[in-house]
Amino acid sequence: MKTSHVPKDLCPECGTIKCAKASLCKKCRIAKQKAETIPQKYCPDCNKPILRESTYCLKCSNRGERHPRYSGGRKSNYTNHCVDCGKLILNVSKRCYSCSRQGKLNPLWDGGVREYGKEFNDKLKRVIRERDTNVCRQCGCTEENNGKKLSIHHIDYDKDNNDPSNLITLCVSCHMKTNVNRIFWYGFLTGAIVTKQRRYK
Image 1 (cartoon, rainbow, N blue to C red):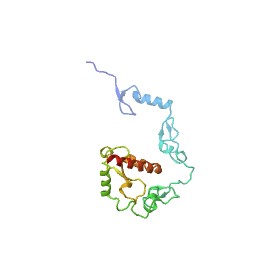
Image 2 (image 1 turned 135 degrees about the horizontal axis):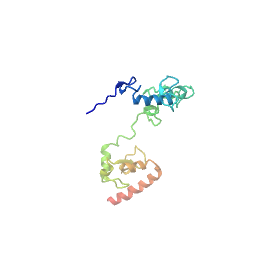
Image 3 (image 1 turned 120 degrees about the vertical axis):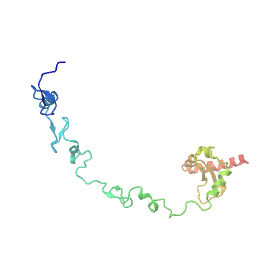
Image 4 (image 1 turned 30 degrees about the vertical axis):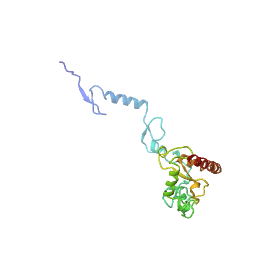
């Protein structure tokens, strides 16, 4: 087997083996030719090498006036912190929206009084559910289909009136519907409970 007698040498740029007659290896020669035709571009701020189509490096392109959210040197409106949770908020507010709606700050605050009377307890709810055979009186949904215990609704929307004739069993979906257009639902459920009580007798 014949061996090549071409003298070898190392490339001064990368240290790989090259032909002794060549000044550089093939890879370094191509890179040098590209550098001569397309000179390396540098960031004018930090002098880092950048791409030919770029004006600044990534860090410098997001600094000062070049930042996409630059507000013309004006002070940001979000400079204050919520006094309760510390969240960054507008400098015209003391509390964030969540904290401003809790406890006594809530416009629906009633002094901490219970919404319902003491008579409206689990025992009464169980009696009403059993009276209505654990079925929604509006759509016929059972407790298994509802996924949780059926709700007990005050027909006249008076939470202190816990008379059984004023209470009706509804599923979650139907109970949510009764919060809108209360006059209609009061009349509808008043008629519905009378006719359905006759049916159960």
